[in-house]
Amino acid sequence: MTVPKPTLALLRTGLLLMLLMGVIGTQVELLLLKHTDGIWQLTPLLLNGATLAVLAWYGLARNAISLRALQLVMLLCLVSGGVGVIQHFRANIGFAQESDPSLGGSALYKEAVMGSTPTLAPGTMVQLGLIGLAFAFRHPRLRSGSGEADHTNTEA
Image (cartoon, rainbow, N blue to C red; front, side):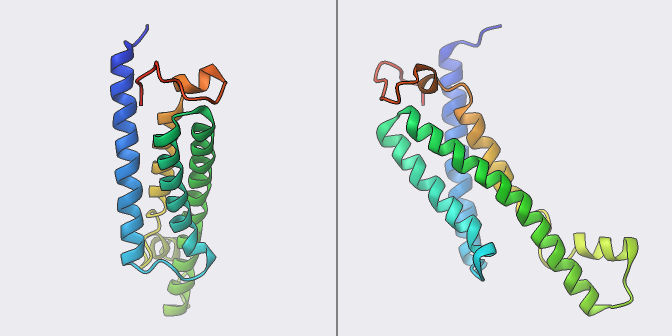
């Protein structure tokens, strides 16, 4: 089954817009929350900045090299999200044990998952990474392999 090129272009454009809005929204939220205490908290801010820079590069160059750079940054976002979930969970465990040293087992787990630091919030970075990878998946500019802009193809 083959999907018509205009449909693919529309889907790809939608993914690009979702990625852009998601990165900007996440960046603003992290800055408003002052998510800047140390390298672990700065990582998503830096990755969102890198994503915006690579998207700007792709917008100007529209070439395979910028798409490969986007794929790399998106993979880093996936890793960052996974590490972030672990970091949030560990911080919540520490806080829960400090607040109530008698906690253990499933009660401690429940407190850690529902703690003051949102355990699943870093999953946003995973989402953004997956959206970016979906955008670049089998992108026409990656098939040419030349790395040069293909002005005959209007696909995002």
